[in-house]
Amino acid sequence: MKKDILILAVESSCDETAASVVKNGRIVLSNVIFSQIALHTQYGGVVPEIASRKHIEKINQVISEALQQAGVTLAEIDAVAVTYGPGLVGALLVGVATAKALAFAAKKPLIGVHHIEGHICANYITNPELEPPFICLVVSGGHTHLVRVAGYGKYEILGRTRDDAAGEAYDKVARAIGLGYPGGPKIDKLAKEGNPKAIPFPRAHVADAPYDFSFSGLKSAVLNYLNSCEMKGETVNPADVAASFQDAVVDVLVSRAIMAVKEFGMNRFAIAGGVASNSAIRSAFAERCGQEGIAFYRPEPVFCTDNAAMIGSAAYYEYQNGVRHGWDLNAIPNLKLGER
Ligand code: KG4
Ligand code: ZN
Image (cartoon, rainbow, N blue to C red; front, side, top):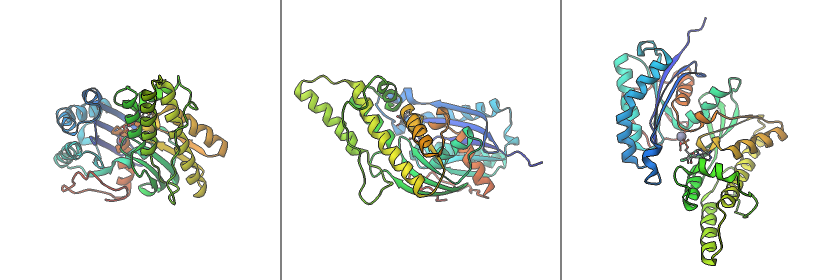
């Protein structure tokens, strides 16, 4: 019988301090997340220095809880995994230094994981039947990537955003209509009460790059709309703004992603990242994939936003591919997908 592989994974790239124990890349034995959102809300966004300090304060406790909840000791773990990029350098360093110290002390292999690879692999947790190849749309606060997952650990970036990430656009528009940080979940909720066709916001296409995205024009269009209403003394219906903005985002994401799935002759499509927990995006993709005969996969919402279980899943496949990092592993804030 094949031996089970247990991975202890650590994630600290932004404002979540997280640790998890994952068995064989797909079974989550524990998933501990300390969210710093409440701390950063008063500043309207993540303050890097505060994030780093809080990670230092919380990381040991979060790791202990993850081991305890999984009912395993460090000695029983096969490898220690950690996000080493992309992300905030100070935040990443806390996870990297802690994981290195633990792995060294416990004489375990160390595996550095790309944060986006983690987001993609969150799909393996929720969807046990999912295997590559498939197309994945990663939409988070920092990234909007359309990726061809050719195999485990094999990625080709087909397109990306030229400016703001989808989540960034959600957060900025939310701030403009007075919803606060993080805006994504708040717009998601408010949009349910609005008319998505009330305001015709633009759907941007990037010339000669059919799989690329651009959200800064949409964000500006929303801000201009709000300003012009104010100048004219017209009242703004925030629910209509939220719904119309979201409709534009959904349209652009669905059209580009489905085009890629078809052009690459795939029949499997997945979404990932914090914005993938958005209810309108999930239902729009479910509907369109249903019409096109494409199998649609998405992680459970708790595995969409930042967590360490997704890092444990990605690390398992890297481990099977023979990837091991040395004690010189460093945080790389702008790490590219596919780089080691
Ligand atoms: O993946 P994530 O936790 O962190 C990054 O790697 O960036 O994504 C966070 C982003 C934030 O911009 C947040 O507003 C957005 O995901 N988000 C949502 C929803 N939940 C989180 N956006 C739209 N709808 C949601 N329900
Ligand atoms: Zn993330």
